[in-house]
Image 1: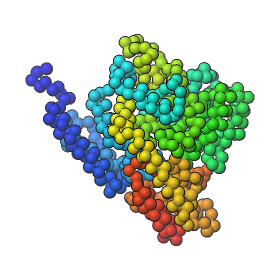
Image 2: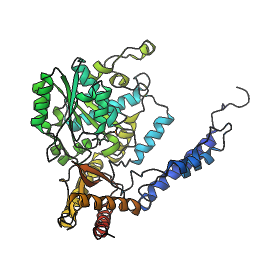
Image 3: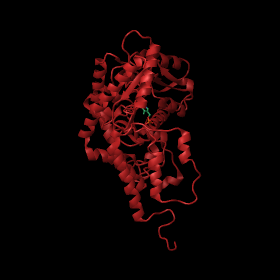
Image 4: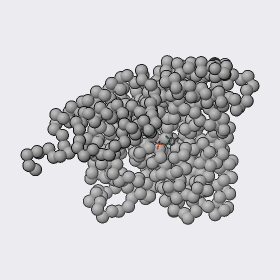
Amino acid sequence: MQGDDHGVLRMTPEAMRRLARKATEALIDRADGLSDERPWDGDFREVLAGRLAAPPPERGKPAEEVLDQALRDVLPYAARLDHPRFFGFVPSAPTWPGVVADYLAAGFNINSCTWLMSSGTGQLELVVVDWMRSWIGYPETAGGLLTSGGSGASVEALVAAREAAGHPERPAVYMSDQSHSALKRAALIAGVRREHIRLVPSGDDFRMDMAELRRYVADDRADGLRPIAVCANAGTAGTGAIDPLAPMSDFCEREGVWLHVDAAYGGFALVTEGGKELLDGIERADSIGMDAHKWLFQPYEAGALMVKDVKHLENAFGIANDVLQDTVWGANHPNFADRGLQLSRAARALKIWMSVQTFGMAAIRAAVEKGLELARRAEAYIEANPILELMTPVSLGIVCFRVNPGDGRDEESLDDVNRIVLARVFWDDLAFFSSTSLKGVFSLRMCIINHTTTWEDVRTTLDLVARLGREALAGE
Ligand SMILES: *Cc1c(COP(=O)(O)O)cnc(C)c1O
């Protein structure tokens, strides 16, 4: 190199510090002022394209100017999923050590694919996976890996199930009609034909109907299909319902079929006493997907797939590659790339480990418990309010309810009122929540799992719904 010993894509240490400091200040200001912000912002493509659509510039500009534009024109146009009154879908409120861990992992340029590439984070992944093993109550044979999220974990689980079944020609997969779209997509990716992805009816409690499951499996076997997996929910994204885990395990054991539990959002309730009771029997499943970017307070992406016998993952995903021959260290030094679909992988264990080390499990348990408790208080509020109706029993932090004064209105007009209320909540900017359809009935839905949410946040949101509900009922 001549003269310039930094290279064309490098910055001086001083410029690096200036940029990083500015980014850090912006993040801390955001976190500090979050409760006073709107919980959601976004704009139409036309507007954003007007500011952002442009060919890549031939010459660069000062990094801080670029950062300013990202902070002004890009990053604010998003759901603030960590806002204390963001109750839509499944929110996420990452801890600061988790955020810093992702920054470190990017800066250290860790590729957590093989032991040779990164033994430090490989060891941490073993540690974190072992924590999860103990929270579940899985045996020593169990293991797993961190994934992009619940979708990735579902794909890997169903591929492992397919391989464990001997990769049959006509596979079928079973799940309830309440299961997440991610599982259907995963079954398709695993090679199951659309018409062989069986959506078993759930009962009025939104849990898998066991008699229906037995009937579907028996009928399919008679038609020459090969059941490769049954998927249970713990809980469903819609209502938080938990499928009958013990009867499903009994059934799958008898049938010799893999049982996968989708615990993407509900799984980390396992760290609490109450959650462990609710999810009793989960330890009998062959595999479990759970998202640390939901109820373990991590930044995206942080999912996990746990398998009762980790050999199944390596049987399904371990494929020799001449270019990687130097990375084979032997059984005690696992290459996580051989357990799932990614080779190059982010060091996801670092964020989980750093936030658990920083706060301790007592604080994390209390944070999960708080979500469960706030949802129960919301339930009590709704039951005490004459114009609100609880749609399903509160489960794992999810509250389904609607405006219904019980004055004999038909379902259609109740749907209309509640759609109006949802739209007005949206435009009010106090809180964000979303809706769902409960067997065709429109329902408002709150998911309360953010560790920064207070009862005041929940109460003012419900007060708002009640006020908007009264106005909508009066035709205002
Ligand atoms: C979030 C969620 C998924 C999908 O997980 P991603 O992390 O978004 O890929 C699947 N199932 C349930 C129940 C979920 O809550």
